[in-house]
Image (cartoon, rainbow, N blue to C red; front, side):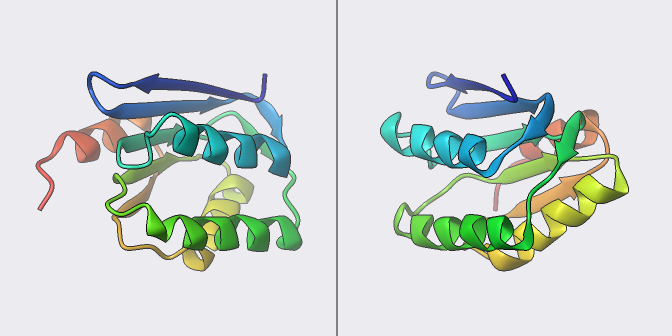
Length: 123
């Protein structure tokens, strides 16, 4: 499974871990699950440390459009994204730029730093 998703309703927290090739359909299914399980407002840790990025520019545009559409689910939780490879970091930056939202989102190189940011008090 390219995306492992854990939704903790008690803690209001979502953890996503990637493994290998992640396709557009995998990410769209994750977005749909957030809506169906009423977790859009939760903070999210998206660990793409083991992603093999093969999303096209068109795929990134679809993701950006979907994130923009989800702006109706306000408030949405903070998003901490983790990636080490230059290709994954570039893909995530393009996604973040296209999907600008009314919620904090940060890119990190280490899960530890992402968790620390999510544990800080939200302003």
